[in-house]
Amino acid sequence: MEVTRIERIRKKLHEIIYEADTPFGKLFDVILLLLIIVSIISVMLESVASIRFLYGTELAIIEWIITGFFTLEYIGRIIAVKRPLKYIFSFYGIIDLLATLPAYIDLLFPGWHFLVSLRAVRLLRVFRILKLAHFVGASNQLVVALKKSRLKIAVFLFSVIVLCIILGTIMYMIEGPEHGFTSIPMSIYWTIVTLTTVGFGDITPATPFGQFVSMIIMILGYGIIAVPTGLVTAEFMSKDRKVHENTQVCPNCSADHHRDDAKFCYHCGHTL
Image (cartoon, rainbow, N blue to C red; front, side, top):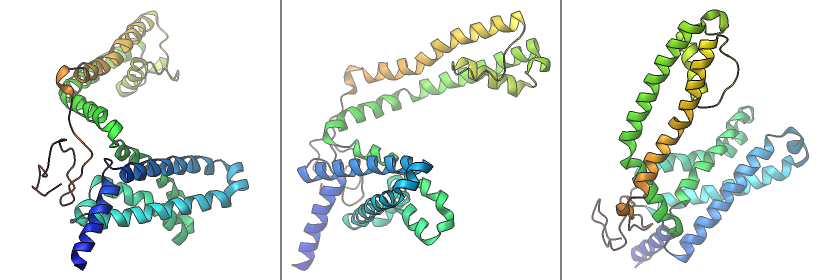
């Protein structure tokens, strides 16, 4: 009887923490999202010396409240799964741990205050919140589109790197060290900065031919920026991109991305 009761509690805890298909699960994710946002704002405000001097105590109280919630959440995630080690050493498990540790590190090692900046890692946890039912379809479509176009993007980026090396070498031959192009790597750096339309201005071509080449590079930059977006958009807008998945996470192996009509885990066969 006691074992059955513990299993029911664990199952309920798993539904609330890991899934967003139930009202309590959605509420939990919304609260978690709000706390992440408050935490990030707190980190940014604390970095301002005048604000830290005036409201240091209040910011510390906010941080400990958030840390307490994250600590309980981390423990709850470990309890809710049947294979805790798999969660602990997973990507999100490590992120969850790093999001919890900073306040304790600062308490135990005051001289290591710079490590409190690890709190910014909490922003990565927003990707977990994207599993809310309202976003799961769109987020899955985006992931599928990125996966489908990854080879095309890789070939495109390789082509851009080759182009930057060639154009950088040409600019080194045209301008030379006397105009700031002291080496081919430095010329490639200038080419990448120009091609991406960043334009730091620390190195500028002085010869008419060099300025002409730089104009061509700038024009190429606008086209190059649009290509990856077009590749992903084409995959994203494909008619067969609709993915019927929900937010259910297997309580046994923590596998996600299950279909709406799934009753068993596709990875281990456990009942969902």
